[in-house]
Image (cartoon, rainbow, N blue to C red; front, side, top):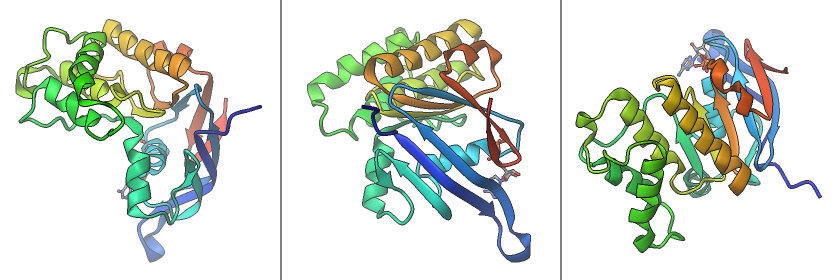
Length: 227
Ligand code: ADP
């Protein structure tokens, strides 16, 4: 039996602006992502990729069409339902927004606190394991101001993945990383997909990581095309 998709987007449309200044940005988007599947989204700048990612992540309200994440319809859902969905998603966005007042460990720990099912005594071990996996075992107790741009990005990736989310949304996750670290990060994402059945939607221009995709979809002027 085929499992139900983690993400089901049906006839999704989105515009910015109002009245005569209204500008359609996404048109008739249909997309399903199944457990364990890695979908890479490519397309020129301004084609609507980030807008689609932020809608799927529940960071923007759905205007028209249907968007189901873990079987929860996001259009018209309550704030509580939205937060529940968001807490199950690992976000890796370009602006990592680490808290300056917390160490690398503290930033990663914050993400675990959103998961009551994870016992507190596991926090340290889980956080250290994921920081180690992104190559930051010697930076665990450093504050963001003492970390380079690439190291901060790796802390953000560790924070997104530490609770083993069922869905990862990533926008250019390797753009500020050297090729070795970039490969390590995509290897972690791929392992999460293969071993934990995590679904991944990843926006990238980085041709070096296209090989991890089960499927590549291309966005052109707000419309999706399968490659
Ligand atoms: P991509 O991620 O493919 O570069 P975006 O989703 O960021 O594309 O943007 C798609 C289009 O929507 C662009 O024309 C952009 O200028 C416009 N856009 C994005 N965010 C906003 C916003 N908050 N308000 C108005 N227009 C926006």
